[in-house]
Image 1 (cartoon, rainbow, N blue to C red):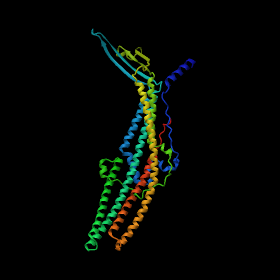
Image 2 (image 1 turned 180 degrees about the vertical axis):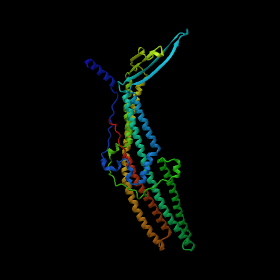
Image 3 (image 1 turned 90 degrees about the vertical axis):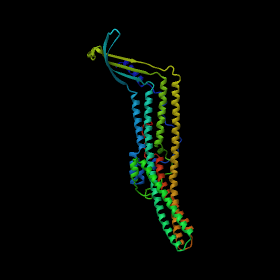
Image 4 (image 1 turned 30 degrees about the vertical axis):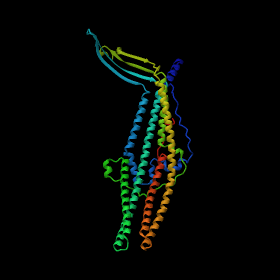
Length: 464
């Protein structure tokens, strides 16, 4: 190949490659705390993080939700839409090929005329000298990654909601069991006092007090059953059940509230490297990358565009001679269009793209800020809820002992009914609080998993 051809080839390559306007993306620098190593939080790095509770029924419910939940299905569809947009953006960088054909006759008012037929293909291609279409393709890819991160956010939120609702349902089961047991004891006490009242051993005031405490527990039990019914239907929605299934099928139970495995204490440090894997942070970064790429696409509007077109085919006056060798025709053209006056439109579009980038940058920084807040709060909640549970456990044990002693004193006639009622109500309250604090312990672990990104895996491509 001679020197002239080499130079021509080099010039052509440079024209086709062009340059890419606009700033290249660089991840913003954040003032992040140093924290624990990710390996110290291995319980939260597995994809199916809810299996740490070792409850087969919960595992099955999570699987059902991931299969049938409508919000997740919509998020998956949005990923498919974004993937199609990437294909569209890439197609804009490729030549366009089209075919055409016609046959007919034309003349004037004297009646004379001639027939003609044509057939051919045409190719059009715009040189991406300034990187406009490359930037648009980059933006489309970034939006795809953002949509994938949004899907993972929905998935993480869904699995956390299923676990939290499941543990709330188990808590209500336990509180209903406590209320039923207490109601049976109160009913027996009322029968005893009714017998005493008939035989003149107690006043009507004492009998009515016992009846009132029984009725109070009955009302509390009914309220708990209503709450449980609402919790079951809420979980049914998360599971993607049909209206018929929601009404006719009961939500299965696995272990009781106190049987569910609680993982050991987790480190108190804030793991910065895990938070970088949070899907909402990745979603915000994908949108930031897209906004950054759109700046380059907007700037390219200032520069001329060069469309190339070529056509080849056949033309003849007789349809039968259309594809003969002599009827072949071709054409090749190159054009140039450049903006001269747009009334400030291009400048405004550039300002809009730059403003959109600043907006997405602020959103990204706010997302990172909230991510660390949620993680910090979740770590503290996980630690404090365990201490709260231990306190309620000690209180319940003390009140149970106090109740046993009070009953003995009542049987011996040493104390009155008011003292008994006071101790019984305090015992019931402490048992209810103990069940609630146990659920809070489990839900704190769920919320910590969610705050640390659960089992979400970082998508490749953001740093490329």
